[in-house]
Image (tube, rainbow, N blue to C red):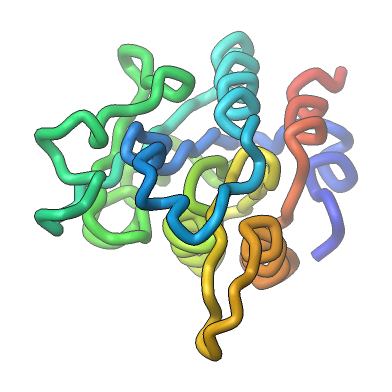
Length: 202
């Protein structure tokens, strides 16, 4: 798979049948516990996601939202508390589908695949959090199910993390490795500039 199918094979246009899929952009992610091991990368990711949402909406393109409803009592994403709410930058508009999930993968037990296919969606432009968890799990499954997937790398972020041997990796390093795992196998990694250009191309 080449660098950017959006700009090359589709002649600069977003592929027909595409939807923007925004994953888990909820207030829970601002809880200090997430950054206990180190600061996140892409501090402007929410602003970038808002730009993507604006562009999709202005061009009457489908927007889908994923909300994590954790079943763990101590989770910041648990329903019934403020962390479960969408962040202002990613709040769904009336009529935009919202898919609730309880695992990292947006397809597991949610009916998302059937709903997308019923809506004629064959390609997904993905943004959200966190890169190496819910985003990666969702992108992997989408690719395995045969969707054309484009992951907007600067519209995602993650946090520092220790590896199995105890070495600490920065958020930027964790993010980059997750993208490397996905690109060319499960999706095409693109920038927000490329995704926005795909809408604006004549």
